[in-house]
Amino acid sequence: MGSTDEPVSHKPRVAVVFGGRSTEHAISCVTASSVLAALDREKYDVLPIGITREGRWVLAPDDPEKLAIHGGELPEVSASAQAVVLASDPTRRALVVHEPDSAPRLLRGVDVVLPLLHGPYGEDGTIQGLLEMAGIPYVGAGVFASAAAMDKQYMKLVLTGSGLPDVPHVVVPPRQWESDPAAVRESVASLGFPVFVKPARGGSSIGISKVHGSGELDDAIELAQQADPKVIVEAMIEGREIEVGVLESLDGGAPDVSVPAEIVVRGEREFYDFDAKYLDDATRIDVPANLPEPVVERIRQLAAWAFEALSCEGLARVDFFLTSAGDVVVNEVNTMPGFTPTSVFPRVWAASGLPYPALVERLVQTALRRRPGLR
Ligand SMILES: Nc1ncnc2c1ncn2[C@@H]1O[C@H](COP(=O)(O)OP(=O)(O)O)[C@@H](O)[C@H]1O
Ligand SMILES: [Mg+2]
Image (tube, rainbow, N blue to C red; front, side, top):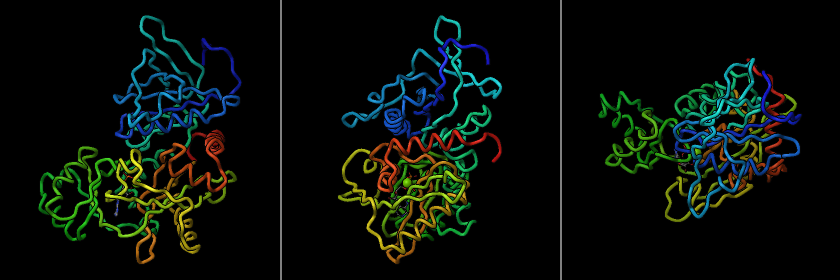
């Protein structure tokens, strides 16, 4: 790479990338706020990069406060005067900054990226592909695992293909809903009501409805389609919601699994929806979950299994239903789980002996050790 306008630094440069084009833009900003506050500045040269809702990459202010939730108001990345371009050419590990009315400015390259993006265009393999092309190590799952875990249809195929238990469901491709809605209604009815209708590639419960009878189905499918043209409908599982954190092992062994948490949704909320996740206090999170030891063991075993089945790297949160009959089924795998200090993932790790800053440090270290290319 050519010379840059920057003073020489020997600290590894960590780019924290957040925001993005998905409906989870704001949640990603909140996550970035906490991670920026936790990164050890003595050790790392931290570069915050925001992606606006339109997909514009900008140098963002290094100000965790600006990205937090204030009085129910959700944060967002605003287009700044400084657009930044990450070269996809691995022989030129440069960042180019474009400011109006001045020549492009070259910044020293990035040593590791923390792609704190949730949902499509971030958690789904797209930014991971860009970083692979650029030869830059990054935190978290690679292209395939990210894409497969993001798409509930393929996540289920991989997990059941590996022998893991999951939830009975029907996939509704957009073409089928257009051409033969009666067939869709019939196959959904065979699941038995209530059902959960979801965007296939969604998150944070955005676009999800609990459907109590056939009369509510069409509206629910159309709502889900606003987030993703491909929709998935699942039989409702009666039971408890249990989540665990998984971390790639530092010594190449089996992944580490945290203590489990239980999500207890109270009050009038029918399930763990967006408001219950982020905005109100109708949800209680028990860490650790109050469960008999054999159930904890089973959950930990299935979580490590799911992590490996999808070839996850770095981190994942695996979410389960514990049915009233005592069976454990996987609901989903999140390759970039919510990551604020009050989110489930950091809390289960804190309860397992890894406080927030140490968790961030471990993720960065895992990524820095990783060789780019096929692995
Ligand atoms: N099959 C199901 N049975 C019972 N509750 C469900 C089911 N699917 C989803 N839910 C409820 O909806 C929430 C969000 O669903 P989930 O599939 O985890 O979507 P997201 O990826 O948006 O988090 C779950 O945490 C749970 O409360
Ligand atoms: Mg979920």
